[in-house]
Length: 524
Image: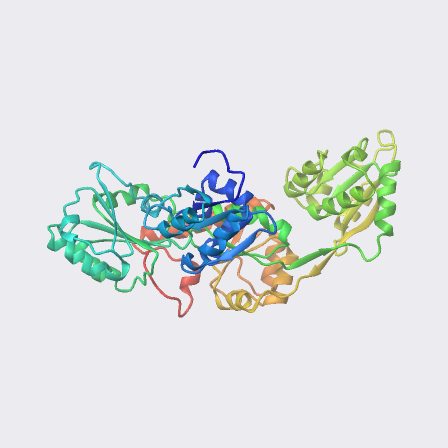
């Protein structure tokens, strides 16, 4: 079909790639964003639905068996809708769409085929195995089809085998019988390009012994050839400091997003469990008076001690039709980096941000004393949570300031997480938990119980560490400064050191959860 989109509906066959949803092509993402209906395996490809508009019709398929539905979605396209049919890997490589395309042709419905990253190259790259090295030959075969293994044994370059994990040992023997040396390097990788990726390196002669307890399942690839030896130098994905770690992030949904993204960059799988629900004050009059005073010049300073306080004030501003210009002439303080970012997003640049400890104590330490010659007004607005401590008020009062301590929002303990999450927390199913405040410690233990003793406990600062220890938790990691970014970095550093220590004594690196009693042992 032409590059111009047809005026009537059409079907787009889109390659989902090998597993990592971030490997989707730009064209595929564009079509998903415009789709009226999506034909997709929600269990394995559901992450791609984030590209779709709200209200898109989802036609779910199981095990990539969409043929019974082809008549249904072709009918939708015939009616003028854009239908995106999501295919595993690349639609044109071992993912035949011939019959579905034929159904489109028979119905005179236009179609487009968008290539995807095939596992044959994507999984190898994530495993640190170059597709073609000194010998520029790259052969891909499907073990599900009848194969002449003797002819494939003649491949001098890299041989990649799909759908062969169940017959890996017989295939290895057949390749040896066809003339391949039994010392030929082999890598078997499953869960490719995802944080479940698991790779075993062996040789054709040792496959049976090395795969005996590996527990491989499809989808998996078998890679045969000297290119496998490059893995020691080129492996970058499975060597990430927190690769495969399941990390509990107990925060509010709004706060956990950026922290989770950073954890993913270190190779971990974050599980966001809200422990705090942020709600408006029971009575709004106090905040209403504070906003009025802010506009009419009642205050010299406004001090924000959390991003939630910024959000609460911003929502009040929007309610009254105000914007960041209302802060003109006011001095603004932020307790830390996250709060400062929330202010900048609002259009307000903080005048004061602690250079040392990012806490109420750190803010007081750098706050200027009241000077009647320099400050025409001696009043400070503190929009805060209902459970805030008096440290900041006491410190500012001692410096000569008068404080209006206003409840901007309430923090309420969230509902308990689902039973499987609670069981994983108490049973050692998580490798680490990130505590960003004392309240997250108290609330997590309150709604889900204490984390298992194999779980790495990482805290944002001394006060949170103290609270964790009061609940009988062993603190393993503490951030060098009180910020979520520093906390994630500290956990990654801890993970890297654990990995290096294991390798130094010849052991296979293991995740903390694999050290609990009954955990399945398998080499990486």
